Amino acid sequence: MDYKQHFSSRALTAKNSPITTLFKIIQANPDIVSFAPGTPDPSVLPAEKFPALTQQAIDKYGKSIIQYGMPQGFEPLRKAVLPLLKKRSITATADNVHISTGASGALNNVGMVLLDAGDTVLVESPTYNQAVSDFLAYEANVQEVACDEDGMLPDALEAQLQKQPVKFIYLLPTFQNPSGRTMPAARRKQVAELAKKYDVLIIEDDVYYDLRYTGEHQPAVYSYAPERTIYLSSLSKMFAPAVRCGYSVMPEPILEKVLMLKQYIDMFTSQFNQALAAEFLAGEYDAFIGSLCKTYSSKLATMQQALKQHMPAGYTWDKPEGGLFIWLTGPKAIDTAALLDKAIQTGVAYLPASAFFLDPAEGKNALRLSFAFPPEDRIEEGVKRLARVLQEA
Image (cartoon, rainbow, N blue to C red; front, side, top):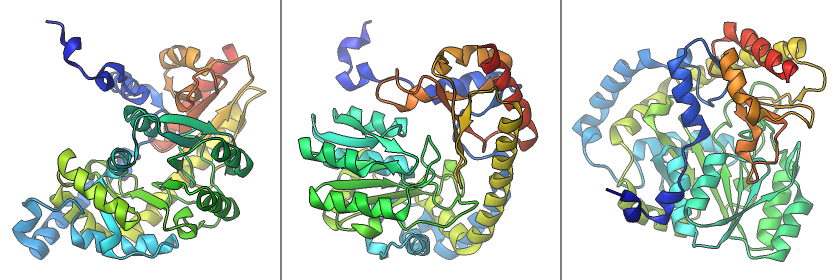
């Protein structure tokens, strides 16, 4: 039977994420040192805390945590994230907060609420590829805005806003995926002012905020334009990805529509998982984040030192103050996508930068490295293998 005739146009054009494909290869060969996935180090996931958290949640909330929930989210968790938001200069109440199935769930919900076919969305260059896939699924016209080491360039952004109606600007201002860069406060304010001037919404994807190892925290873009910013964050990197708890703050009229449509997507995010997350935030979150940052800071330093020691001449890389990623750039003649198979055969994996641009021809000579996932004692060996592949190329 030919099932193609039954598929929607969205299903026919859907493609597997390059990360999903790489995961399958990596799982089949544990000797590969993988710098590809932006996932937490398995050794730091607090599995040993779950029995106590479960008992605490049952003792406090009873059987309600295994009952159906509400689309907006479990109220104790909505209250528990308020101190996290306050640190980011976001003033909110539990009534303003929405708990989603990961930040990606909120992004999809918001896309469904805001996007019609042909609507223009502006994104950074490069940007998070999964977000672009979400916007394209709603048939948006996604366009890149030129960036520098501080993020989206205000002049380039304004030029785009002047020439066409824009539905929203999508930003990852803190330890951006994939580049690792952070937008300073002054630039954040400029972007917010342009959004006000041209009556455009902003989606601020801020899932790495707490993973800062040096430097000073920056206020959320939301704090400069709360009436037109949708702020998204998550506990996936800070607690446990499988719990799938994202949280967001947005203007009330948008939230109202998001909650209406969420009922038709997944009804509500697991109330049981939300209860565990609420207990974790109320108890050990600050100490855990301190330990997590110490671990990742050490791994970042190890990778930086290994790159300095082993990379061939002609390669440069950024020095992020936090997050999970390093952006590596080589000579223009290098094609990192073409080299990936050779790298995997050599025992190292990465994501080619072309995966993060609308035009795959861009970023051919760059790649993204995640230092979070591999054990620290294997990072240098992975960098050595990568350097060997690049040197031979």
